[in-house]
Image 1 (cartoon, rainbow, N blue to C red):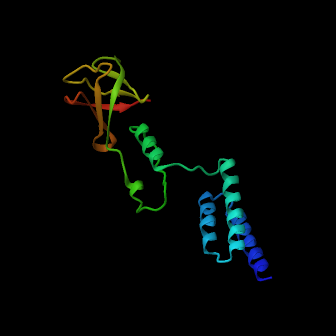
Image 2 (spheres, rainbow, N blue to C red):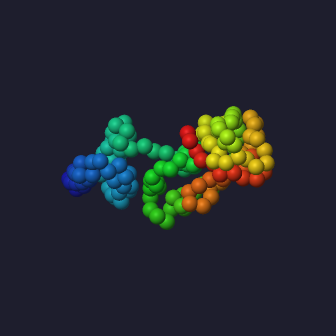
Image 3 (cartoon, helix red, strand yellow):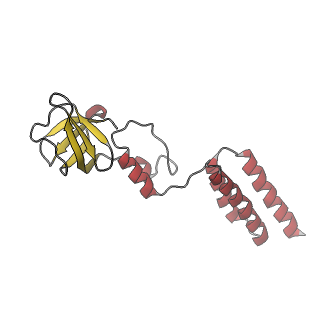
Length: 173
């Protein structure tokens, strides 16, 4: 009889929590972890089953997405140079991953062409496209060259082809 009461209590609390927290995907993960505190095995299993079902339903509706830290790093690298809003991932402000900011990238040039007086448009192998805001003082960029693009003052960027002098550059695609 005691197991039945515990089981009903566990199922009721998870169902109430899941419905009360609809639209808050991180709460769904918390519901799964709360089940660990239940000592009765049957009640704990029922809690896990209910919480995981709610989590799976949210995933199937694409309300929640699970990503790896490596995937986040790759995405940050691909978005380097694009102004996007800061999105909190993986928890609080003290999270080491949250503070990680890419300061520079090095990539191979896929194509480079003149786009006006002393200006170049450069497409990198990763698909991003950059445009110089001034002429490269030391070299004309060519397919296969290496370019290093780094953050500069006030949200600007500097690009250096094959380690030579830098020029101001901005991402256009």
